[in-house]
Image 1 (tube, rainbow, N blue to C red):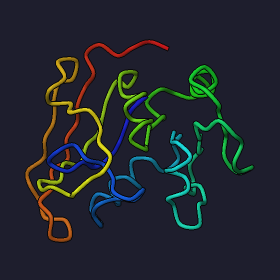
Image 2 (cartoon, one colour):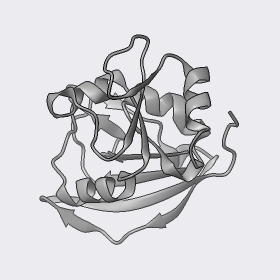
Image 3 (spheres, rainbow, N blue to C red):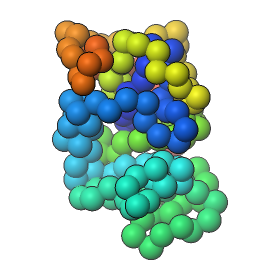
Length: 165
């Protein structure tokens, strides 16, 4: 299992249940990376999508205490989630938010793809700082590039000690 997100300079990932930045290059990377794959999210992330609809051309798994839509796979707890995602190749499963789902599942991820936005986005939700976590190793960082006026870098972190499920 992997995670994918963009984070500001303080490891913020969202503001007012939405993304902090409009980043076309990052969105293209997200789309290309997750297309045809399994995406795991919480109910707030699902609700933040246009019209609260699941992402097209992906298997949408929502970790939520109640069933919310018939066009997603709803799992109610981590046991159900792990049983569901074991049905798929591990490299095809991506955690896509929100912050509490990231905090819960990143320890289980073998790899985390982070688009680092080199500015403070005024976030109100954060994920753990992977640079400060000895379990994670930064194995790739792209050259800086501009994305809609923001300096970004595409980074890949490997979890040297993922928790088993």
